Amino acid sequence: MLNYIIKRIGIAIPTLLILIAVTFYLMHAAPGGPFTSEKPLPPQVLANIEAKYGLDQPIWRQMTTYLWGILTEFDFGPSYKYHSRTVNEIIGQGFPITLKYGFWSFIVAIGVGIPLGAIAAIRKNTWVDYFAVGVSIGAQVLPNFVLAPLLIIVFTLWLGWLPGGGWHGGDWEYLVMPVIALSTSYMASIARITRSSMLEVLNANYIRTARAKGLPTKTIFFRHVFKPSLLPVISYLGPAFVGLITGSVLIDIFFSTGGMGYFFVNAAFNRDYAVMMGITILVGALTILFSLIADLLYAWIDPKIRY
Amino acid sequence: MIVANKNKIVKLAENLTADEQTSGRSLWADARTRFMGNKAAITSLVILVLIVLFSFVGPYFAVWTYEQIDWNTMGSAATLGMPSIETGHYFGTDDLGRDLYSRVIQGTQISLMVGIVGATIAVVVGTLYGATSGYIGGRTDQIMMRIVDILMAIPFMFVLILLLVVFGRSIIMLFVGIGLLSWLDMSRIVRGQTLNLKNKEFIEAAQATGVSDYKIIIRHIVPNLLGIVAVYATLLVPGIIIAESFISFLGLGVQEPKTSWGALISEGAGTINYDTEWQLLVPLSFFIVTLFCIYFIGDGLRDALDPKER
Image (cartoon, rainbow over all chains, first blue to last red):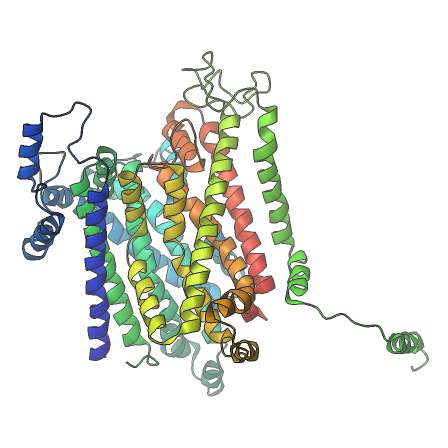
């Protein structure tokens, strides 16, 4: 196990370094610097600005400085557009918001998806099963950017129950629609995966043996069925996390929640490379960390994996 | 009893004596029969073909082009821009007074094209990469798959947006970016299949007769992978269309006056307050119906072709 953990971390670190290197070089491959504007600046002014941001240094030097700043002080440097703000401040403002509704979406996706899939598998070919399968097929063609406007039409315009956007410190009524829009497709995927893996386990020989020796259904389910059928779900958690983070960009734009996605897209329009780079690296690091945790969890649960 | 079954026996005897050469059923013929028997898949295929045809034939019936502004309806889309035959705006107008019928056709073309081109790039890269990795095996395989692992852990939408911002927002960049970032799953599936194939006798025979590795991969491995590749390519298309629509929804994808489903849905969603529901619902229905169709076709193909299901 320890070997596996070390090996797994051994992959995670180069991944992160590659991500940082790639984004960094991309930024510098961009035609026109971040301070190219319609009205050209006098060369002396431009040189001063570039010196201030360290852009006159050779690229490897810039990169090591940048990397060193991240590693030692968690410092992503200054924003190129909002001159008085650092990337850290911008992330600090957006990240807690993203974290809050992201966390709830994750909880909903797992907390609804797994039971739904499990019930569908146990009551195969009943209306519960058809409902679950229907939802999971429907959710495949209803990505968050389709669901979000539909939710607004129904809950804000027709029923008038929920506000159409905003954050207000994360009051529940501002949280409901973002969470539904963000979590539905992952909830459906988790339900589908749980259902099919649980069906496979339920048909396994050892379950028949357990039934034959007269164990109560509850014991069979919780002791013999539940754990092995969760394995495929765990390996899906990594991709689901990436999807949730990506989807949050859209949620921030559509519901004006003001999370990280808002700043990312704004930065994309303003060509504020420092902010884009900072957010991409942070998101990448989180993703890598999360898939590391998911993998370790998998190895811990699955007795067949021995490293 | 025996007499009652006489007909049957005679028929049987005839069949036996006729000595018909029963032609062997190939994998593809088998798959076709199975696919034809799948009603959902066939219906979806018909609808999808109709949508594709519509996107090519539709422009000939259009009164307005997709960038022409109807100044009469501009500003009063809710009343004058309603879908109607008389004004020539069969699907109504958008917020700027442009004909939604033509714009939806344009968007359909772009979105379908992104799906097909993106999937093609992903299939070519993924198949070759996976087949090479699986066939060569050993250390090369390990390194190549480790690279895939590393790339998989990168949040690809962020990197794609980054690419679009850095290299300018063009359709080509969008195609290439999406294609190059979605071959990873394909390469894993293909590698797994290749590992199964490479110990078969016909590969051994090819090796024994001195065929080069490159030719074995291209001539013997890849053709045998086509079934599974076809299935996953079909299942890849909706994901790619969704990715493109997502980016266009954010306003970072296809640029005006050209449009795509994502951009149209975004515009429609922006005006839902003004009693112009058709601006959202028309592109949305095209999007949903097409995705459903592709999904069912992919599902039908999987049932027909995936060896695991047999």
